[in-house]
Image 1 (cartoon, one colour):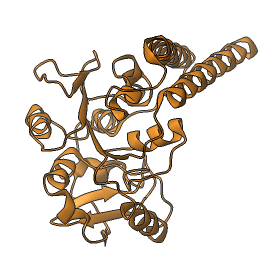
Image 2 (tube, helix red, strand yellow):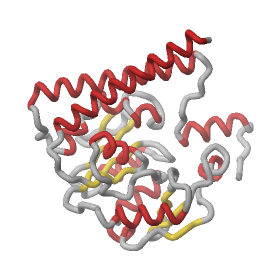
Image 3 (tube, helix red, strand yellow):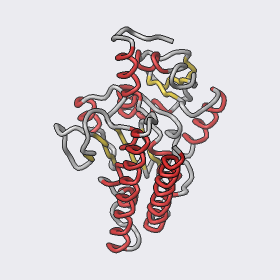
Image 4 (cartoon, one colour):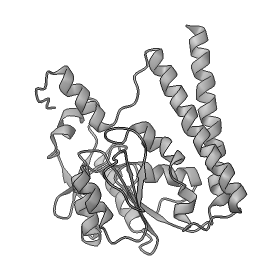
Length: 274
């Protein structure tokens, strides 16, 4: 058992080292410009942390179900014109199944004509509302970067709606092979995008500094190659760590889609409510 624990600790150290190296290279390549990332989950917040940049977006520490996210993006300014209104429960069965059971009983807000915002990483409504309002006021409307990941009740139709949005800089992370386009990054897996793909594996398929700098990163091709190699090493190290943990009985971190599938299987398909 102790040797297994040592092995996992070594793998943890490798993930941390490769991730730190990849982030240092990202910072070296980034041009220092401000940017606002809109994201349907915590992905954007992770980008800000990796580059040690200020949060110029309220889309951090939160997630939205895919239909609500597309509704919000299709009339973004109207939805962000007023602060979210507090809600006691979600309209989504999947959320009702996990909130307060697998996930904490986090605050929920409603924007505009009904787009739900799930403040997953906030302990209270007051904290969530304060952070949302302050970060919304900082949005760089001239430097918007909009990301969509194909999960949380997504569909091919929603991906295509996202592709048709009038934003200049967009990216869609997906495992689908039936959609394509300049802003689609195919992650090479199956089903909805997974937590590992959202956390690190996407770096093997997408150059984030290039995206944020319109392809004009600092350091030229040499630094770009080193950065891409570090991204790939970080992703591979995370895959090795996850596989080793599962082999030793660890439970992997699951997305909402995966949690709901597991709950439905364990309950024989019956609806679970909190």
